[in-house]
Length: 247
Ligand SMILES: Nc1ncnc2c1ncn2[C@@H]1O[C@H](COP(=O)(O)OP(=O)(O)OP(=O)(O)O)[C@@H](O)[C@H]1O
Image (cartoon, rainbow, N blue to C red; front, side, top):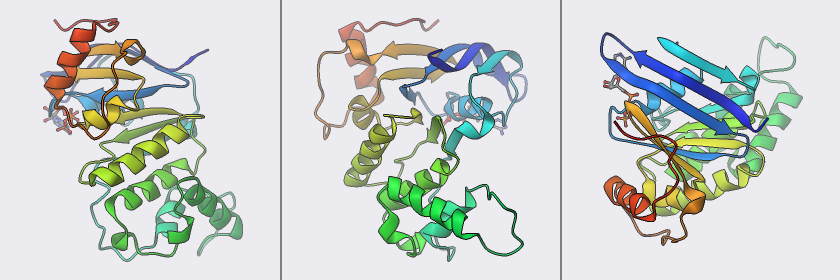
């Protein structure tokens, strides 16, 4: 089975107005899926449905993974950076301890958290305060926290918001490395970077339009910034394979 998550005819509304309509989407085992779309288009809502934080009003979400095999890096992890906590402590917060302890963490917990920091090349910053790290370094620590449960799928909501271009590239290079063994789903407005990393794109504006990027021959310069409209226009010109259409 190549699919890890299957959404079938999903409808969702917070009140009476539909936020998502008739969403069909397969997330594949080796996917690097970029979810793009306008503000309020329903991107974060879709992630919350996949994470079981919300229930669809209609339709079905099939998961071919255990709950702890889905890692999540939420939006706005830059909040509370003044809180006096180290990178290691942030990662330990995402860890499910093997043995329950009343105070502190066991040696095994710390070794496991250090291993996660190593996977994101942040082990040398374990004892640094999270507020003293750069935006890109901090985001890598939050990715390490999500790696604690050895996920097979990682969902990231705007991971490079308010990170400089160099930091963005580091985060996406890391995600590409992780994608060798983990399916990656990224919500982002940061299309020019995603163009160089994503395998597939889902554009969400209440409805979903899916693009297979492998058919695009033209390579974009990583440092070139394209807006969403330019990207979609580029995709349209290249006539990529779509399995759904805007209505
Ligand atoms: N808890 C909520 N209660 C009511 N309405 C909500 C709630 N959360 C989101 N919405 C509304 O649902 C719609 C979709 O929101 P969502 O956050 O999923 O969009 P988004 O595509 O992630 O937007 P952005 O790019 O701005 O983060 C918006 O109109 C938003 O105002």
